[in-house]
Image (cartoon, rainbow, N blue to C red; front, side):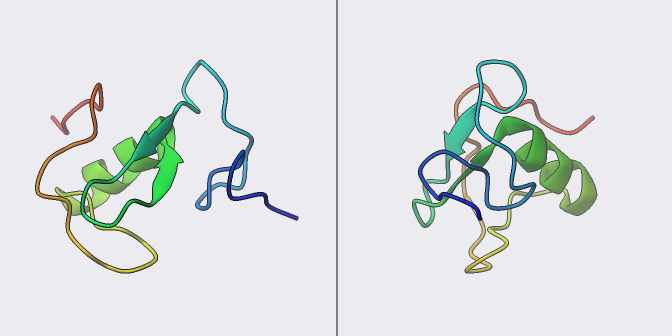
Length: 67
């Protein structure tokens, strides 16, 4: 079972201080790990919340932009 407070809602892994650092989306307040958000950004060219489908107008702090 996934705990919203401690686990990423995309990969279901526990947050940590490496690549699973929790990042909050300003568009809706949802929190996902940095690794998953980088994958979403790379795939879509933008951060789109997988739950509510809102597009984040700015990247969470320290998130690497797609190259």
